[in-house]
Length: 456
Image 1 (cartoon, one colour):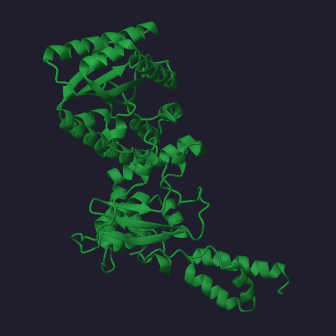
Image 2 (tube, rainbow, N blue to C red):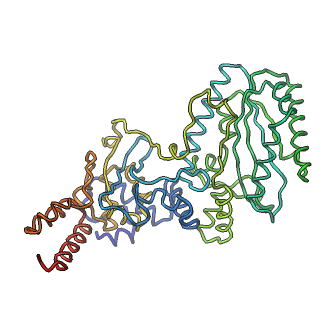
């Protein structure tokens, strides 16, 4: 069965005898033809659209797309990318990551997952040490359809700064036994325009009665309403929330309930709560389906959140529980191989490697997510079978994973001159090292250089 027939008909069983990996590979091809989309395919699709919408001013343009150290199509011939298989999935090593929780759904999923675990561990240790309580607070400001996101976000940030400063907050902190806090910013868009709001956790080491908790709730709302009134705004009691918990899981899920954690981590493209409300990921999905207004809104959102922190801790409180990891490091971190075996007998770990030319072909066919999905379900033989369906041929270096063995970008200069007398040996050297297309290009450049020098 030819590769064109396989792609066009999406037949689950090829006409030639089945070889290792064919089942997983043809299942992937059939899914692409039927329009079925897994979570692993959704996230790279949205990331690709974000890069196209935002352009070169944002690192998401090259995230998961460019071999480390490259830019766009300028991939060095010696660059390589490794496919790693784990118990829960597969991932690439050697690609650039942007580390943005705001605009990259792939990095956002990794960062949000790590932040949930971080907040959960800190909350569990705090509650174990103090027998105290964690108070969950939601704060927002009034908004309307013709307001931009950046001024709204700035007003919200300024209101929070005014809330935690001054003598009134110090008295509230002492009465509650407040030891520290963390807060996160969440943004949605609906028929009333942009809706930025804060989710905060207040870590208190005192046990208060129900009456004292209610008194604290009333005071905090009135204080927030006073701050907004000074800005010419009216606070809404329906948009204010003040609850208490001793469950670290509830606390961590509450403060990192932002769309990255609630949607990308759970592998859903779920609409935000509220009539007509859309999360940034839903805006991005709508833009990918042709909604130009959604694309304009996502660009505005990206510019407004650029440089902002998603999760902020109170001074000195976070330092008690060890250093805080950077978002870029969390996005680049992957599960290490542990040498165990999956059901098909394939070892977990590095299973294959691609070099520049093959990676360009995979990108051209938009197979980056499909390769990972196929690698997890069928191992490296399934990946090779998938690439054969799209007529992507690999060089000898890419048939299986080997320990790091990066070929040189070009022969050393001294060897280049020494081999002029025997160009055939140099050609064989190039053919053994590089993919066919790269080798052909280098041989052509070699002979052109010889002609320019007059055959000396």
